[in-house]
Length: 286
Image (cartoon, rainbow, N blue to C red; front, side, top):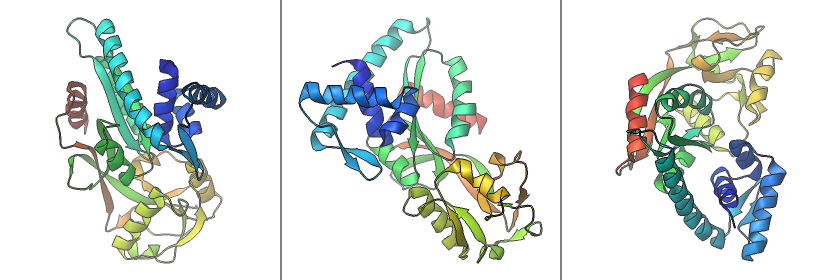
């Protein structure tokens, strides 16, 4: 048994698939799978069982992952103490994020924070939606999370900013500016696949707006959404700041505007010093 295997097991438990875990750890998926199989053979137990397109922990696997987290936290703390500059903060920051918000977390907030906290180890945990965010926060897999608000009252929420949700249309679709929200009724939309958290959250938004669009394309492949719009297959609802530079599409606001609040959330318990520093930092940038 070695630390690399323990990190692979914990990452697979966090991400739900070995492919996603390998991507998060920047290793080849076959190497990760082989390391986990070797550990299972050494221990004489099965850690993961197939669950749909991914994997799920067995009962024994859940127990081992709890101990593995403790072991890795201890090792990380020892490493941080040895590598910290004089007077600097040490430790690990575990930040969860929805898939939609992860790019700006990793491209903006975390790099800026890391420049002043070079002794802090940062780990990002990807989550499908707000329900998954709540789960990783409640069971201690993440210290804080970036997500859409609101969240259940047992979590502490810190709003950072409001985002405008806009309509991204094929150039050939004639829509006025701004678009009446009622125009979404019957409109052909690019939507996440059925049964997932992102689809459930989008449908909840559409229900609140009182509209019923038609699902023209159903896919969880975010990279295919804008090409589908450009090809005229349908329109898309997305945050304005994530499509301001998109070419070959038309971006329209709604009347009244559709706004979403983005914030950081955490469990209602004392934060680690590193997590508290990150919360203060993020709120200053909000």
